[in-house]
Length: 147
Image (cartoon, rainbow, N blue to C red; front, side, top):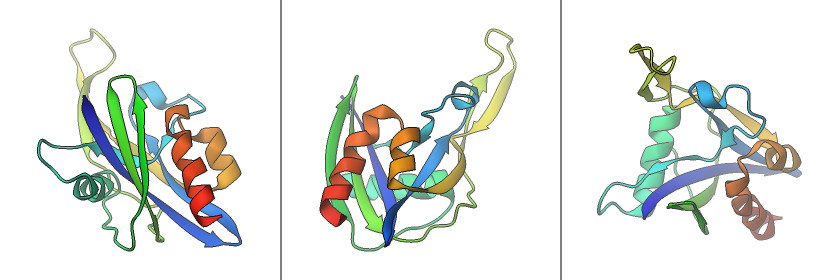
């Protein structure tokens, strides 16, 4: 089963605020629930937290450190996602890796799209409205941990 690992930065100044990334590429452009925790695939034999930190850097161009709080795993169709939260203040200005995709489909034209096309801070209620549904358990777990 494939594994993904990610980092969920948060701030707790009164109301809980979360740092999410918007998934790049044409499929997510107009979907309401198109925001995600910065995450990506774990390489063979790679430590999960190491993969999460690497993926955060690949998707945002930023390094992140601090006291990582494990939020466990969520199983989706064919994948396990592991997430750690960390109190941090990464910038919404990002530089993301890209991926090639034939676009439009069956055109023979390959376009490079960013894995992530933007990042933003959301209060917890707004994050619950925009985050892809499969990742919602991580927000609920963080809320229980930090209030």
